[in-house]
Each structure stands twice: as C-alpha cells, then as structure tokens.
Length: 275
DNA sequence: CGTGCTGTTGCTAG
DNA sequence: ACTAGCAACAGCAC
Image (cartoon, rainbow, N blue to C red; front, side, top):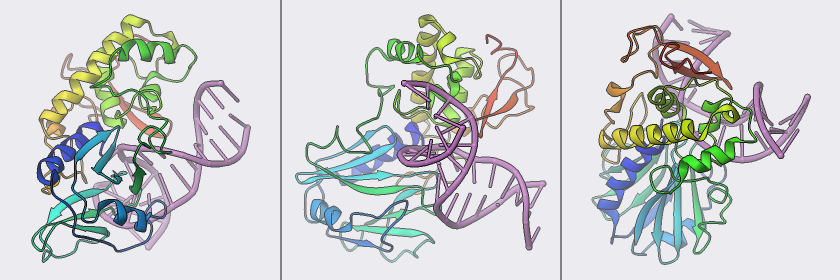
C-alpha cells in the first residue's frame, strides 16, 4: 500500500541508518522483478561507495552515492527490511544489500510490481521513471493552482485526476478517498468543473492527511512495513477507506463504495454531495 | 477449488 | 489528446 506516507516513513528510517555508511556486497536472487534489474550498474554505483543521501521522489526511494543512485519502488507488496544475515530468508526475497557481517537490507516483493533500478548522476530529472513525475504535495509551492490549471482540460473524475502521478505525486487509492472526504468533495465530480477554491481545499486536505499519516508511520492494510519490519498505524485513523456501510465520522450516515477505473472509492454521499 | 478482490504504474486501444 | 482498461504477480477471503 505504499503511497507517499509509507515511502516517506521508510526513507526516514533507512536514511537514519545508512547515511555515511556503504554496502559491502549486493546479491540478486533473481534477475528481474517487474522488469530486468540493472545488476551490474547498481553494484558499480553502490558497492564500497559512501551513501550521501536517502531521499524520496513520489513513491520512489533514492539511495545516493558519488556515482549515482539506486532507485527502489515498493510496488504494491514490496518491503525493504533491515535484517541480520542469519535471519531466515522470507519467500520472495529478490535482493540482498549487505552493510557488514551483521546487517543487510532485503528487498522482498511477492507480487513483483516493485522495481530496483539505477539512476546516473545528473539523471534525476531525465530518468524515464522520474522525468514525468508531477509536483510534490508536501514540498512544492502552488500545488492548488497547479491542480486547478492541470484540471482545466480534463473531464475525468477528480479522484482519478488526484491519483495521476504526472500531475501530483504520492497520492494513491487510500489517500485520494481520504483527502476528498476531508475536502467534502464528491470523488466522481469531473475535475474541470471544480473551482480554484475547491482545489485550495483539496490541496490542504491532501497535505493534512499525508502529514498525519507520516506522523503515524503510514498505513498498513496488509503488506507495508518500515525498515524494521513494523507496520504503520494510520489505518485506525482512516475515515472512509474500507468503511463501506459504516457510519461517516462526521455525520454518521453510511459510507458508500463505488468503482472508478476498476478501483474502489469510498466516500460519504451526504458530506460529499457537491457534484 | 474457483472467483474476485487487493496498495502501482505504464502501455495500449479506443 | 484524453481516458478507460488491462497486464505484470501472489495471496487471501469467500
């Protein structure tokens, strides 16, 4: 379920642990996950090289050395876990990043929707996976205006629009529903019918829910874990996601579920009636 | 034991 | 040009 708050929580933990250290060896247990892994280049970039930064762009984690970056995407079920080398190997462990004889990081991803890739120095804005990413909701300025402008030509539902990573990054199925509930906007409203004021409300709801989720270590429905293998705790604070037929925390009416582009959307038909 | 869901992303067909 | 649908995969609830 990794959306922005989950990746941010992971990145913070990994950064704390790995900054200034380096990988002694790397082992790939299969040559591909979602696509072939650039094994040779990743080793060249990382092995013996001091880690100078661990950061996040959208839902991608980036581990930097003087030679370039390792890119990590968790897909739907990925984990990047700090382990002891003698811990039993979990099923679907695809790569081992060894720090020393006591500590290694394991990339585990049953569904193999994740990715491991290399990014060259200076390629941060041109790498195929990173080039088309939209604004960072927690860091960039004028997100509301950007959403408003981008929405002018789009008649798709606002929930789908919010999940479009070429517009704004980090918002997946859970936080899209949650943010629209907070903004009291119906998820099926066409994006181009909303005003700048609506997008100001949406942008602040997005910021708010993402920040709160990060403060709780993210949301764990099933698979997400931080680097220590611990789940997040924000799921107990979800207002609408997964709450079909449960009472709306605001008005006590029943939460509804609809399918948009094949994915479940949850909302309160009474609070979010503007459509 | 099928069938239909599940957190993502990018390609394709319309 | 935009958008809905699907594929990639494993696991689990029903």
